[in-house]
Length: 428
Image (cartoon, rainbow, N blue to C red):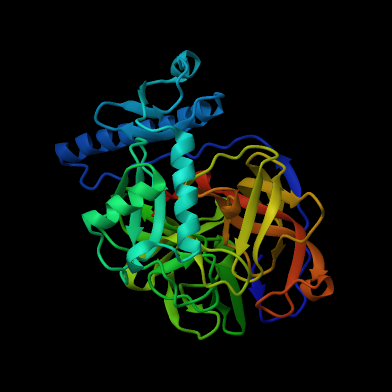
């Protein structure tokens, strides 16, 4: 759903689902120096790490399906080739069926020191304090999360905040009823920018422009901040079709045309079959958060993990042109979709139950996330790919940042887990 300024009426997109088969991307390792024995050893180790990571993701998805587990966190111990599971459930946990599916990983269950319900309640209470500006000591909290081992709550402070003292931590603990830990690194999560005028470090859900040709300016949305599994370099992930067939391009903010970064046509940064591109952010730094809310949003929320596609669950589209639209039901598993003469892989279909419009031209490349109002842990589902066109958004009273945009009530996105795997990336 690229929006261009060259024409006021976009071509209607027709979709044909070819298959609903799950597609697994193959993983390749580049040998830096084939003549060196060390490089061969490193390649072997890297393959094992990637295989363990893929197996851990699959096993974790199965573990989360087991009822009454009260899972607090799951982590892969790469050295011991073991999947560590932290649960607050008091009942016996039988993982025999899941362990039987494992190829190389052992699964070990640990009891948490606090019940998941108490940790969830503490996060909810802390969020209420932040939103109500009732945090003591004029402290500015930028993010909160449950520690993966269930030992308490992890708080990250903004750079504008005073540093946490032991007295302040004890006061917060008394209010929440669980241990509190403070991240030693502060972040700059408080926003002075917006979807249409983002600034470094860059966020998902923002709107950008790029010149697809000398006479056509295209508008798309940033998806998620990602980090290379091999080099740790940071990129923004968006849709490949945002850049057409042209040469390397610069990205500009939609409102003020400030330089945001660049895009390369190199095969190393693009997966056309998955409709995914990596862009080079100005300054080389991205955030682990996305804008959410209306098209005029200046607020962001942290994306903490990648979600598994589960049919009939509800998600939110979050493009930079039309903003966030929730109650979007997942209607298909990742499969193949045929659009304008090209077959795209790992595409998921969704629509709002009540038929409301959920996406607009220009939202392409933007994130699909879990509903921020449903709980404190927001997860990523995908990168917005396309829509089934209903006509001009103005005809349906849908506010957008780009005049003349077309809207749709059916949306297609690229499965985020598949996109990350294809590009050998992790969420930032």
